[in-house]
Length: 67
Image 1 (cartoon, one colour):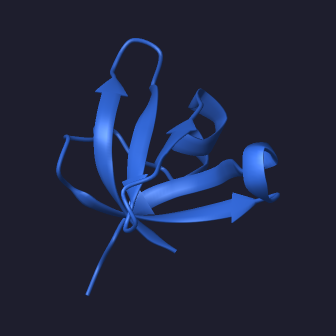
Image 2 (cartoon, helix red, strand yellow; image 1 turned 90 degrees about the vertical axis):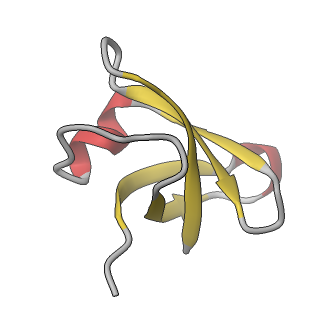
Image 3 (cartoon, rainbow, N blue to C red; image 1 turned 60 degrees about the vertical axis):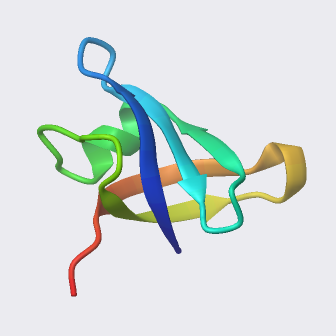
């Protein structure tokens, strides 16, 4: 699934993305570390892997979207 980086805290390595429908979805340090990223800037297109449904949705991995 694709999304856009919305917020990012470099100290906690966590933040949130905006799904293409505008829904915000937070990610934690484990998801950031799983993607192998060093930095994330708001506005960057990212690829995310999500588990769960509804309010139980959780980002498992976040990495940069590549063409």
